[in-house]
Length: 331
Image (cartoon, rainbow, N blue to C red):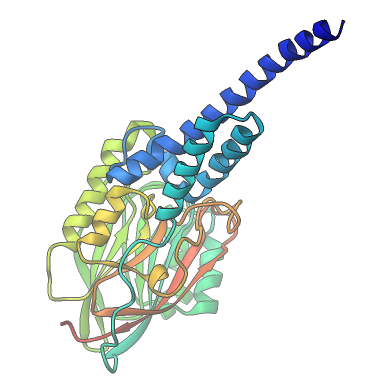
């Protein structure tokens, strides 16, 4: 009888152990595949780019897999999970070099705001932020013609921001630049969504202000996403002597190789330099607990970030980003 009970217990335990091992393997694959692409400096194909956006959060399935492997006494799983956890931890620190040495006294200071309005729905929230925060330069994405463009043309906004640039049509394609300083159109980065550029004169000093809004890395638009980020990289690498700001919804994080290439071309992430690396900006419903930082203000070396804040605007899936900058003489 005792032998029969032991056999029955073993028979019942085996399926449960197999189920636990199957779950552990699935969790490890979810974490391992994007980790391999991150280590290789590539973005891969769906679902890798989507998982890379949340790379730090992959520590959770890897940790669960470690616990399940321990419970099932699966030694290979323990080593596999430990290796994945160490690999993920190595990529969690913010990407890029440390803050540079002081440039000396600044030529001027300015405040920059970027906001994705989600088809114009957050127009009222943007207007409230403009009144409250008083940024000098504003990059707006998803500025629809009915709500956003009409509101930006109101007397109150024109009085505060007499210089502006509107581009694109439709709820998602439209973009805008608002400025307290004189500006003129300075071309655009080609893309499915409007990415205009303005030449701005700030206290007698010229800079280029580029709106960024590449397509998201959806399965059907991965090639477009890479190509448009590549064009932003080419702009950063153009080596113009004028300071450059590229602000907007990049639809990419520091764990995407295509975005790191933009940084490597000579730009710095203001949030990272101001002590706010990896602060989630999307999706707004789960931030700041869960999310990815895909909204950025990137600057060339002549611009030094001093402070950065992420603002919650109602009715949009993005948080806005407000950055205080100092402009120094180009070196």
